[in-house]
Length: 443
Image (cartoon, helix red, strand yellow):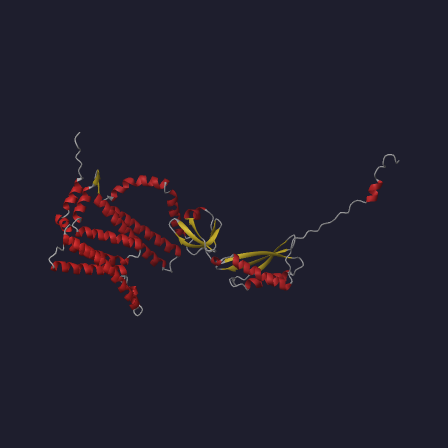
């Protein structure tokens, strides 16, 4: 049985063959070993010196605080700059000594590219994204320095799939993914900036501000998505073919998501609720903190934040305490004994309400006699507040406490349940005895 001919794919053979042979030859020499030792030494010395420099910068910042605001004055960047300097000086020394400097030239180029990239990515605040961008950019720069960029691009373009007029290569896929990631990041940054500017427009209704912010975010992300597909080489007109399947997927798998999204738009358009409103729904009382695409954030008085799906706010009953007017009327029912002075009790109840800070003077508090109960006379105090977001139970408690103190001073008594029990005397014992028949034998 003959041996099978096992060979690498053509694109991989082309990639290996494209690597400069002189570069391989230069990396396996005695001079390259000295160059490697020089680079290692440069890293060690730069690490120590960077620590001393940053200590001096810290002392200098006491007199010049603006130095601390310079993002490039960090130990990693200072250390990288020193490494580039030391290796470059070493390259000059090697050249003057007649040694081969090919390896050192490559090292200087790679280290200089890393230094420039580290300085450039300081504008990115997210650490994980900053590292990803830095390593990606440096990998591209390294491939250019080593002469591998063009062969890799050619090899990636050779790996492709073709279905009719549709053609997708590995190169276009990678380019599309990178473009998609960049475009999404740009869209997020622009949408965050746009939303912050829109929310500063205080002369516009809060619901319209939220609607404008969401439409802006949707528009930017849609543009980023379509531009990413276009960068992959996908014909956007071909998306119409998948519209039917997409509709079925939305109808089944994404039904709740789409329902919540549409409900959120409806809430913003009809302005039934808006950020800052005080609402009560499904036993949850609080004020609206944020209207999202899928849910509405409600913060209660105890600081708990509830995320309620937008669809529930459409289909379930919602009490909006501040829909058309933030003023809310409260009712407090209590009873006094029948022996108490009812007119005096009504006056004291109104005084207690007026003395409470959050109770409005217009309309004024009023007290009514609403009925005669089994144990006392039923009274009801009515007053208005205009800040239900600060709580309604606490203001009712303050009013009731003031009524309690005023009633005790005035001698007005709160009734308590009373029952009168009438004891029916038993029948006369003598008459009962006379009516009994005589005992046997005693006739």
